[in-house]
Length: 379
Ligand code: UDP
Image (cartoon, rainbow, N blue to C red; front, side):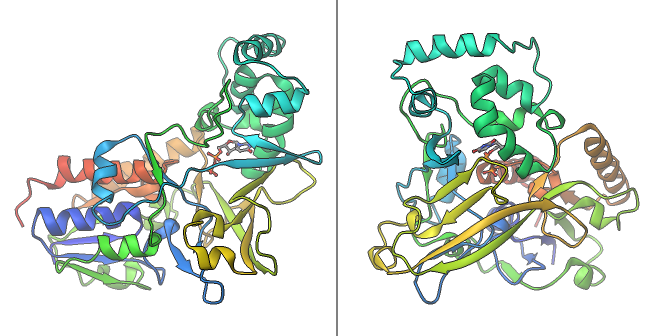
């Protein structure tokens, strides 16, 4: 076997397909878990038939035509458009912050220009020339009162740190709009795989050159690989080197699942909880992702899950890399050492790259790695 990919998430699975198809080479794809899709995986709940996202809501969105065209070979995407709401002090508001949120919060009926002028005054009260962290950045975008209501405590729960200790660009994931557009994303294309993420991954990996082995840790097969086998490793780099320089910091999540005996529990797919007195950050209600599936949608019960962020310890599932100086340096140290000692090993994916990537960025990096590092190799 010439290629071995460690991790059947969206990065590893995309690369397996590209190698199998583009190089006509055999690929061994491993995953320690017993399912494909990594953190994007979905399954159908046996009782209700609802498509559930195993590791929290995943909505596909991109402005990258190459990524969009590639994935459209393996699924039809629905026209689902993500809308999020947030609870604060006994009321429900629209997220991301848009004209509806602003008017509702301030009890006003601003036009777009009026809202922009009003927010300029709010922002001027706490003006920071160069925002250096999440709090300063958020206040510079929306002013202190909206920040205190919708961002401060949610962020504390999400990251387990003060927002002043979090990288500024985390907050720029969220749009701020002076109109009533309540779409959570700004991208050109958006949707959900019509038959679910699991089916998308099954199609992606359905190629005679791909051998998939689930529930198989890398350590179990590593010694049996050919000497010249090219390994693409998408797991955590500190784990690969047995944490010899220390543990990379991640934020982990715990999901509390419940099937509730009501047709519609919260009226939408994601409800955020902005306040500190509620210990979870959000509740996902999965049937809202597929309203076109009329039977599960009408079923008189619903599958929900509450999301609780927590500190990562070795052995936990890693979700969010914690971007700061210490972690960047530690990551680089592991990467340099691996690059020097393992010329046949490439790294990638959200875990391997230690980057807060959305699904489309992971696919884009797989396409790029294939073109720049693998496409010219003999099979
Ligand atoms: N965020 C917030 N309040 C919200 C939603 C998001 O403060 O209601 C902040 C929080 O710091 C979070 C960041 O914005 O980590 C990015 O949010 P996003 O929804 O993109 O995070 P993800 O879906 O990747 O968990």
